Every structure is written in C-alpha cells, then in structure tokens.
Length: 186
Image 1 (cartoon, one colour):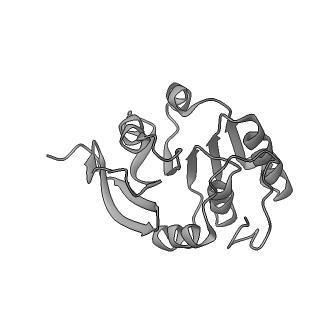
Image 2 (image 1 turned 90 degrees about the vertical axis):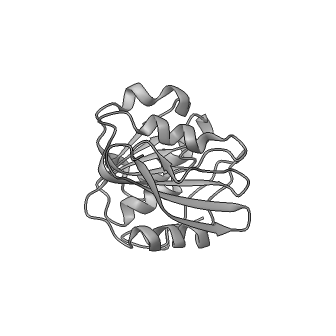
C-alpha cells in the first residue's frame, strides 16, 4: 500500500503485523481521487474507520490541510500515527481512538469539507453514517462524502441533506459519492 500522488507520492504505508484490514486498493483509490479531483486546497477531512490512514494521508499528500481519523483498533491506530510521522504529516493528523458509533459528539462543529467512510463490509453502516453526518455543524454545505461499501449493501440516493452524485463499482467494492446539498429534499 502506498501514496499514489502529491507531495508523498510513491511512499509506502506500513501495516500492523496482525493486520485484519481490507485496504483500499490502489485502483479504487485512484478512481476515488479522479472523481473528487486530483488535488485539494486546504480542505478539512474526516476519515471514519480510518485503518492505517491510506485515504486520509493520500488527501494530505494532495493538499488537504488537516485530517481527523477515527479508528478504534489499537494496532491500526499506532500504524496510522507512524505512517503520518514518516510522511511528515503528524502535526496535521488528529486521531480519535474510539468506535465510530461513539465519536459523533466529539466531532461537533468539525466543519469538515470531505468525509471518507469505509466501515467493515456487511455492517450496513452507510445509511447510518449519512444520518449521523447530517448533525448541524459537522460538515459544511457542499461537503463531499465517500462511502466505500460492499456491492450487496444498498445506499440511498438521498439521505437528509446528502444527495448521491456518483457510484463506481469494482468487483465486490462500491464507492458511493455524496454531496451535502443543504436542507433535506422531498
């Protein structure tokens, strides 16, 4: 696993020895950033189920200003912090080592512009994540949310203030792209 573009392009990311991750493949990651745009301009990023930080560190490499990573697994969290340090991004990473289900009140007024969510497959967490992100002050209007999920998980076209803009499938993996469009539409 590596950073594929930006200031840290080509640098490898370390995995914990007891890794039970399902890392986002380079092909999926490349498509994700092709859809979002190759580079960023200081966005604040929230990475839910962050693993070792592959997506959030990629965003920092491409110009995001800060990432808040939520990862409950101790080994993954340690690898994420080590990767951030190795890449020179340690001062731009906040790690919350708690289950995603218990993090929402700690993120109030986060004003994130980009959110990654890659929960364990078959958890059905996609719709719940969108519902939780709809809390006032958590994301900015116009914010983008990328859900990575199993192809058998149905995600809504609309959920509260979020509207799906794109959907890309790669075997069992699907990326659903949402934008915060304001008040819930009927």
